[in-house]
Image: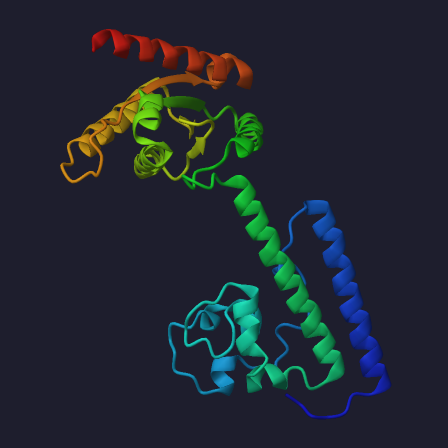
Amino acid sequence: MTSDKPTRNDIHDLLEKINNDLNEFIKNRIHDGILSDKDWSSLFTKPEMEWCWEALSCNKEDCPVRKQDDYRCWLIAGTLCGGMVQGVFAQKFDSCITCEVYKQYHRRPIRSLYENISILISHMSDEAYEFRHEARTDSLTKLLSRTTFDEIINQEVKRSKRMNGIRLTLVVFDLDHFKEINDEAGHLVGDYYLVEFAKLLRNVTRETDFVFRTGGDEFTVLMVGGRNKEMLFYIDRIQEAIAGWNANKDRPYSYVMAASVGGACLSDLGYNIDKCVAKADERMYQNKQERKAAR
């Protein structure tokens, strides 16, 4: 970095640039509703700036900062991090404030102002991401939550209509005799079965599809694309995965895992979400009665 003392005009121009960047960032974030510290960057790639691994002659090839266009390690991983990503705000900056690389970029007051604003935005972004992630995720199973279901299914319906009717299918699962497990063995054992079933769903479901926990022992999968035969194939795979899980002699509890299932195609029902959910539920309860009668 240059050590030349900035002129009054330099300071004025830099402050104006910072203010314009910040103003544009705020307007964009209010419009989009999402914070992203990558959205304002006019000073990030000045030619005299160098990465921390350059300044410290660090040979950590796996350091995440080496793969970034932004030289500011304190926003990405944390300085002197030894190649380990430190994603939590407090962890990152606890090491940064003692690092010579970090101090180098904060010696000039205007530069320090810009970096402090960047740090603040980065912190806000981290918090916004964590809050959004927690709100979207079921805390027990780590699947998408019921509150996220309406948001995602409406988004996918809009996308399907824009793209000439990509088929959307709902598959609904309900664990059999789950109340019996809870009543006899307790909720901790019941939670174990919920988590295990969620793992089976994640393992079998495609990455392009969405898996939700929509109730106590109710799960819903939104399949994107595919026709009725693909849905039936998917259901068969889930039942095979359950059978394989039950065959495992090392499982800690003797209760058998079982699930009733029903499906319906949104595309065949005019993208009417309520009708599709009702139809899938109806078929699931019909399957549950058939399974009871077959015992």
